[in-house]
Image (cartoon, rainbow, N blue to C red; front, side):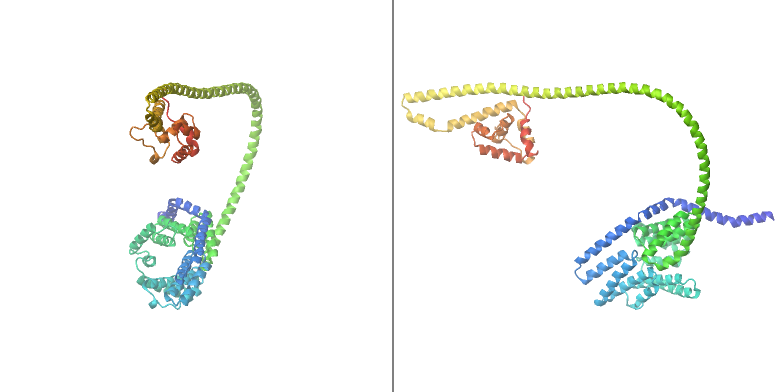
Amino acid sequence: MKSGLFILIVCLLFPAYVCADTSKHALEENRKLLHSLDSLLEQQDLFVRVKEERIQQLKMQYSRVKDVKELYAMNRMIYLEYRVYDADSALHYINKNIQLAQQTNNRTWEVVSLLEQSFVLTSSGLLTEALKAVSDIRPEELPQNLRSEYFGRLCTLYSRLRDYSSENFQLSEYYNDLQKAFRDSVYLTATPDELRYWNCRAWLYLGTPEIEPVKQAFEENKQTLSNDSRKYSIATYNLSAIYRSENNESKYLENLILSAMADIRSVNGDIGSLQEIAEYLFKHGEIDRAYNYILYCSQKAMLFHNRVRIVKMSHLQNQIYKAYQEQSRTQQKRLQASLIAVSFLFLVLIGAFLFIRKQMRRLKEANLKLDSTNQKLSVNMDALSTAHQRLEEVNMQLKDLNTQLQEVNDQLRESNYVKEEYIGYVFNICSTYISKLEEFRKNINRKLKVGQIEDVKAMTDSSATASNELKEFYQNFDTIFLHLYPDFVGDFNALLLPEERIEQKEGELLNTELRIHALIRLGITDSVKIADFLHCSAQTVYNNRLRTRNKSIIPKEDFINAVKKLGKYKA
């Protein structure tokens, strides 16, 4: 007898234990998703701001609308942004399109707008007005896609009417029959590429083997649809219902959370998924989260003016609120008990503090003596550190002075070498020119003695001699300079743009441009002096220098200083 009673109790309690364990497992598996959902709720103002900015951008485009067709399209785009966000604004823009359709006698526009008007009215709980909006539409006048949408709107509308009249059994059954009839019509008219086709099949085949291809279709939609769209929210919500019918509580909760997250991202005011999550969490003891979720749902329903949703969630909201208050009271009692325990511990802590204080006083006296010794040591260390730092500074100054001295010595050595080389070359050139002048004098004297006056005139009238001497002078200058600075031409070209670099002719050492800057390298920067040296005009030198600076790859103001440092001299 006792054994049989024990077995009966176990049989009664085991399903409850399994159910509780399954719910706990589902919650633990989806804990990260719940944290992500909490994070999204904290960012809800960001999503609202993005939505408002997108709407504002669309409204700003109104001034650029050119014809009625564009105006209809613009109104519809703004309506689509408002349709699950702000019912009143959505109705405002869809009413504009109804007026446009009637003014242009465009029945297609009118039907589409009436169906959209019915959707918003149904979502906001104005069910009589929603039914009136589609009362003049005849299914036979509609194309295939609009026909399935029309039946879908009526299916949703009668579903809301059934829920709204749940206390009147007869009326509720009447609306339920109509809802089923229009659901069958959706099934017959919708095509597989429409989401409502799979929504209809989901509710028709829920709990039957035929649900498998429907589930597969929703799983594919879940992978392809954007996770901030209403279609994604609907697909994952339907998946949650399917998994619940299969007793897969973990997958049920996962898809329900994904649906709620999509609703939050899209700022959906007709949010059912989060309400269902709040109810689930409330049943499994997570009161704080349930309270936060139902509070969000209530706020969105009030802003959207969703009368049906407000009525449906009011009872649940009251239950959660009462449980939240009871939990707060329990926490307050625990807090009071904790305060008493903490007070007792505080008294013990005071006693311990007084004892420790006495010990600390003794320790302080010892530390004072130690501190005095440390301070003296610290003063000595500081003095040593200061002396070491000053020594380092002096060493750095000496190092800098040595570096500067080395640079000056290098410059002096280069200057002395250049002077020595040039003095030798100049003396040689002067000696050569004296010999040439003496030879020229003798030739003139010889011809004058024998009366060759015409030959003397010919020799003194021709400029060929001066030209030849000038060429020889340039050749000597080029040779001497390149002997002193053999890398000058390559280094000078490195300062110019690649396409502007100087290419020397065959047998040419330096050209005019290079000679001008060779003189600058030797310290002669005055254009007049350079012109006298090269037997050309000062304007020619100036223009050449300006043109060369314009071809430089470095700033113009740094070009002359860079030229002065070119070509390491050959000692």
